[in-house]
Length: 107
Image (cartoon, rainbow, N blue to C red; front, side, top):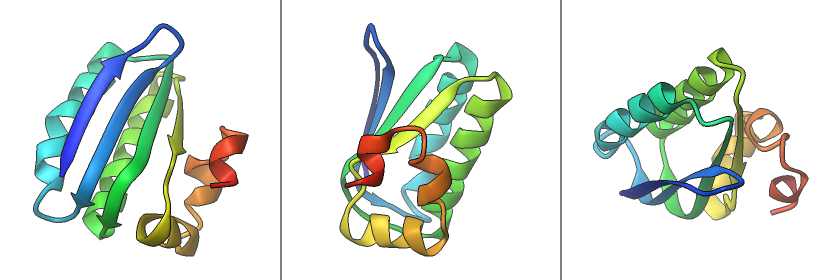
């Protein structure tokens, strides 16, 4: 898994690519902590490069979502497709994580 966090004028963007699973999710922990500290008002999580997600990866997204909600920020997941999108839909998390951005719902 490769991830990158950057702040743009309109939103902060977390890009996650590769496989977000039980092994790689540990690498994302410090970034989730950084996001919780920096408190970006609008966080977009770009999963367009993500090929695979497992339950630990889903847990990391939910943890991030809760952290952002705690400080009244907004988070939306963009670009999920194939297996990651199927998992989010199966768990009905697409309705929560992707609902804030209409474009993301139509991916």
